[in-house]
Structures are given as structure tokens and as C-alpha cells.
Image (cartoon, rainbow, N blue to C red; front, side, top):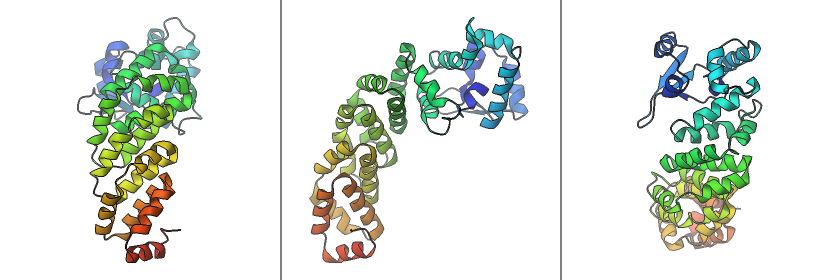
Length: 303
């Protein structure tokens, strides 16, 4: 567990018991001592964590310093390979033998900046070169309902290996992903993560999501959410954001803006649109009633 939790990655309990043949009673005993924490999500296996990544780091260093420590487990993981490959071999075994959604979670944790000093990004680069792991990631994307996670996964793979990211994204069923976008609770956080990540891996795939994002924005009543969504996408997917804004029904959006009493929400909306297209933002502000324009200028939203 220390190998995984160095990167704050929980481990499926059944992996430890079935693949590494660890005793259930030993795991329960450690849970009773509060050394291990167990969590469970609907539709997922029970997951085990250590109490802190710093504790995991201490355990991991102990395994490195004392070759005989955990010898039986290490032999099962390494299969005669060099002990320096312990971490890679354990991740490989985990990603190719458990719920493929675990692969999504692992990519997200390893790909971030938090664990770069511990070698997370380097480990990710090594893992995603393998065909079996790529297959696990593709299967995980199909099963994953959280579109934000799908986006983060694609983005971090693109940061590690753009060619692999493009290959993985090319296998995504865009129609299915678009359907998930259309029913997303609001037009902000998860949609932004999803579109930005897909576009980072493949601009062409990102552009295929324009229609579904536009439809979700059209039914969004919170104009601040609309601004956040467009502004967030524009940060890393400018061309995709511009395409969305160019197709927005300005008349409908103006009606929503005119009904809004919170000048801050209006400001966020206009600013987000401007990040994607200054031309469309200017058109919207020009058509606002003079009172709203004056309040936006007073609040520093118009420059």
C-alpha cells in the first residue's frame, strides 16, 4: 500500500487479497489499529488507504533499505525482475488486473504537479507506453461516469505523451461522451475539465464536443456558470471555446442577462465570453441597456 499511497492513491482491497494473497485478518487488524482506512463508493470495490502519504513514504523507504522486508510479497510482484522495478511492477499488476476505472484514478494522481518530485510524472510516462495499460485506460474511460475525471485523465496523458493521448482519445465514443455532457448538473466544473482535457489530447476530438456543450449552455439559467464554463475552456482550448461562442444564440443569452439582478454574475458571464471571443462579448455589451452597461463599467467588468 505504501507504494501507491506515496501518491495518495487508495488500493482496491480485493487486489491485495486476491492478487497478492494478503491475509484478510491482517488487513482487518490494521484497520482496527487505525493504520489503514477503508472507503467504499457505490458500484466500486472497497478501497484501502494509509493514514497519510508521509507515512507511506517512510514504509516505502524501509522496503528499499531492507531487502528482506516483505520478501514474499516482493517476489510475487517482481517475478524475478530487478528490485528497482518494484514500484513499476506493482502499478503494472494493479492497472492490468483490477477495475479499469482504477487506471483513470492512477493517471490523475501521477500526472499532477503534486508528486512530480517523487517521480509520479516519470512513472506515468513509463506506464502508458505499455499496450495493456493503454487498453485498461480505454476501458476505464468507457466505464467512468464522471466526465471531469475523463478530462483530467486525457490531459495528464497528453502532458506525458501526446501521441498516446491522441490514440486513447480517438477510441472514445464521442456520442456517448456528448450525452453525458448534456445531462451534467451545471455548465461549469466537470464540463470544463472534460472539454479541456479532450482538446489537449486532440483538438479535433475537442471540436466534436462543441455541439453538446452548446446545448448544455443553452439550458443553463445561471449566467455566471455560462461565463465560468466558456472562460475555463478558453484558457486551454481557445479554438473550441471560440467555436462554442460563435454559435451561441446572442438574443437568448441577452434575455437571461437582462433578467439577472446580480451585477457580479453578469460580469462573470461577459468576462468568460470575452476570453473566448472579444467580438461576441463586445456585441453583447453594446446591446445591453445603458443602466447595465454603466453598472458593469463601474464594477470594473468592462475595459
